Length: 359
Image (cartoon, rainbow, N blue to C red):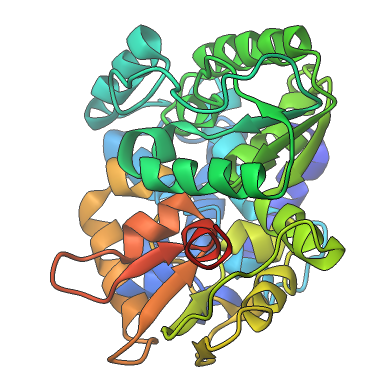
């Protein structure tokens, strides 16, 4: 970490902490150890060599969703506390970087290139070379292949040539669980396959994958050899150009959940809402805490696997923001999982809703 990073951590540690009301983890756990300022203090003390992390302190620092809700009222515009907390436990020799509960997921990544264990090979879009590479992501492949099928149907309907590769995990979960060497290994393999594909652009519906390809790979010295495109923007442009047309009306009542990365990192505030406006018959109910003020569902930074109890509390808190009836629509595989309950509201990814009316 640079000296400026330490300065920013100290700024956070000594701040009046107006972000307390915005940090979803603090709001559900009510533990001072997981407050943004306390986590910043732990990280700053470790950087200065004044603290060796125990499992308890590491767990507190790792209780960060990466949602950036702490930036909403932060007086330090250059502070990215979510990134600082992750870097602090990966870059400092005196910091313990992983917990026993994460070791199984790291083993899966090493053995199967997926945190979920063995996943069947892609069965979609095997059409040879094309300029567009569709990257499905390990979470959709493992837990919601319907979203992959919906995406490929939309691409076919719009006449878009595409290809897919034998994907490895983007690598970010390995960083999250304290193994940057494994993260680099997975990233290197993906970069090699991307370059070998001959594609000029990569499409992904996963905001964590998008952010990893867009920012984390270049930070590793592995800039992707193609343009990175997010799903909401891509499909909105296809609808705007007339290549993707709505064929049937929808009688659904829906509310849209904004994924944190799309609205706070990618600044994708309008595209999903504009897509919903283009679907005739759809009833859209606006909810509180939307747009940049969205509340995390509990799925950021692999929380459903890392800290399932906390993730469940966060999703229950978020679900209270939605109407009793109706369907939740979102544009993130982690959010779909976080908001789904066996006895709860139906949850669709945006591409699943689009495929139902366009194909």
